[in-house]
Image (cartoon, rainbow, N blue to C red; front, side, top):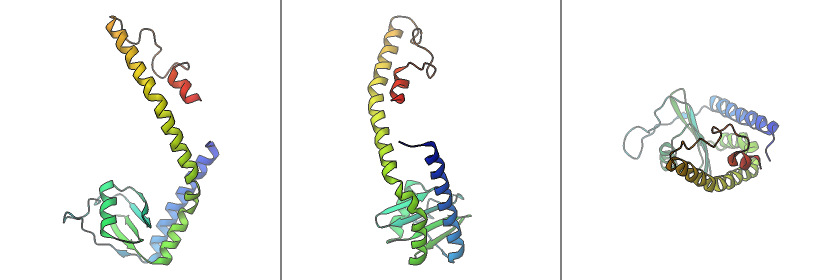
Length: 172
């Protein structure tokens, strides 16, 4: 179960990791990365938003990257690296010491991974429970309209009834 205090703690950890990554980039003397996509043009990530991709083996941590950008970067650069887009400039870092420092910044987030996976599993369970209820609701609404009365004549407005099945499912 997730406690409200843990959520605040996660934001603090994520903020520290992002801040640390920015500082790490600033002091590392990173080289500017010249990038071309497989399509021959400038990488699709020419947006001005800051972004990064930190790889570790087959896995990568990233933010503000499209799926296309992520895939293109993984194709362009092999092995472990830190790619950063900051203020419109792009940097590629391969220095092992700097990569080790960057990985260490995210270690507190990795320790939360089992809890995050448990939450994802619970969300899947709730989605599985919700699907039949939605179908039932559609059938009820359809039968009300077929009888010549508004579908919502007998039901409270959506989101207001604490006794709705959806609300009871989420309260479990």
